[in-house]
Amino acid sequence: MKFIEFLRVAFASIIENSLRSFLTMLGIIIGVGSVILLVSMTTGFREYLVGQFMGLGTNLIIVNPGKTETKGLGSPGFEGVQKMTKSDTIAIKRNATSVAAASSLIVGTADVRYLDRERRVMIVGTDEAFIKVINIGVDSGSFISADDVDASRRVCMIGHIVKNELFRSKNPLGDIIKIGGSGFRVIGIMERKGAFMGTDNFDDVVYIPVSAAERIFNTDRLLGMRIKARSAGMIEEAKRQITSILKKRHNNKEDFTILTQESLLSSLNAILKTLSAVLAGIAAISLLVGGIGIMNIMLVSVRERTREIGIRKAVGATKKDILLQFLIESMMLSLMGGTIGILIAFTGGFILSRFIPQMAPVMELWNIALATLFSACVGVFFGVYPAYRAANQEIIEALRHE
Amino acid sequence: MESEKLILLEGVTKVYGSGPTRVDALNNINLKVSQGEFISIIGPSGSGKSTIMNIIGCIDRPTAGRYLLEQIDVSNFKDEELALIRNKKIGFVFQMFNLLPRQTALQNVQLPLLYSGINLKERKERGLYMLSKVGLEGRWHHRPNELSGGECQRVAVARALVNKPSIVLADEPTGNLDSKNSIEIINLFKRLNEEEGVTLIMITHNPEIANEAKRRVYIRDGKIEEDTSL
Image 1: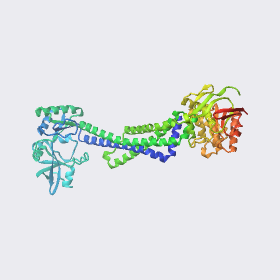
Image 2: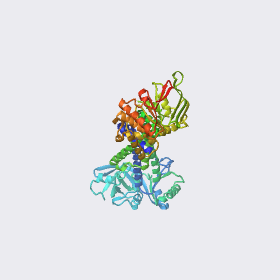
Image 3: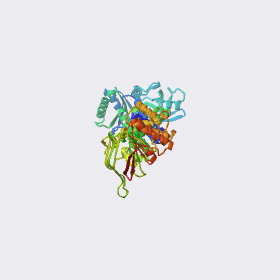
Image 4: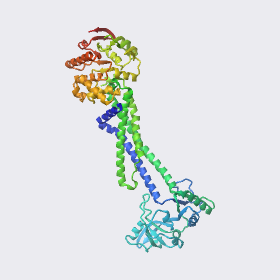
């Protein structure tokens, strides 16, 4: 019951000096608010990236030529590496039992022309397996078939942006477009995929049979393969099979890199967690500054209330009672600041989610709990010294204090 | 009257500072106080009367000698033990009233009970009862700045008595009051002493006020020069 009384006294003292209390809290408000907001922004960004990667397709395995020693997004090195060709893809299709689909990929850019309109776009040479591996659908017409690849037909699928830029509202099916000077018949339009990692590159693409791409770009080197495992549980087995098949075909050299969504995501996650920690750390500095502000004001408060401390001790308050009273006050200051900070973070998060809905900040309970706990700890830590000073006032001196 | 010795000071000496700044505030004081006495301690300023009250009130410790309160030697008690004694055994009335300015009369009276760990309901009951004893039952919700000096001092007396202490120590209780209010406070003390058997020790430099007590102790240069029953 002393405790309740101390709470009341602390609250009354904070309210009585409301402007001073608010200014004191400001450091904590800014600290807690920015820690929560920054962490939730990176969480939102991470969830966005995860969504984008998962949106590529499920059970996706990426095989690129060249060996990168570390996991992650490292660019493949080409020197001394045997090229990867579409026959490698065919071998995997035939022999890897855990693989559901495998597609070849040759990528380049070329000018695409229809009548007088021209656009430089990304050309993706691939095969019929592509739409089984990558999570993308066909809007109208039909995707490149195995026959198209075998016969090296000059046919193409176009993305939405390409369609709109070259054909406007006209139906392009059956029309001929020029890709790097060669005519290709449009056999379909891809479904709108939307932005990926902030770019439009899935919709600003022309897909042609990989065999046609070999001719246009004058190479049979694949950029890589995109492979789908039969199930999530078979990803590891599929990786083993792909490795052994490719090694056998490449003179027993492991001159390729296999990536999975999980491995990509785990390295992305690691980067983002570090980013999040760094941002939170910077924001936490303002909590520290806020704590010093609390200590400063508590020292002033203890001085102002010297006489009150003397009276309380004269009627029987112990050192512990006085210590507790002032600790509660500083803790209340920082917790109130923390609460306002949380509210501000929520408001900020809400406003941000209006402006960038796809990367809306994600508030997590642990994050809020941690920030609250931290602000309470700041209150205790920076309140201890003033409270200690209060508790150790000499009664006689304190009662004489004006 | 001569029942148990409530207070026994034996050779109590208090020295402040050392070397050239050394002050001998009390020099070998021997004093016995019995249950139910009303004593005034009088002396010029700097005579040591405040020091003796601080020691009896357990807010200061003697440099040498023994202080027995209810036959217990408290001279070497620790801070926390002294706080408990102040809370249970001693009531203070100060010249400057020393009420908490932001709290109501009732809250001020209840303050010692808070530190005794008594619940809110009982605190309120006992606080209101004490306020009625000092004639302020209708003013319990007023803050000190809404009360007159005399009323403030009566609130302070109620606070001193609320935890049923063994002694009430009053340090110049009429020092900040006009003569009418001074007489009221002294009469209140006398009534409490006679009707309730409260033991009172009052410090004053005013001989008229001092003579209202039953026993007068005159201190000078840290020594008791005169101890008279009136």
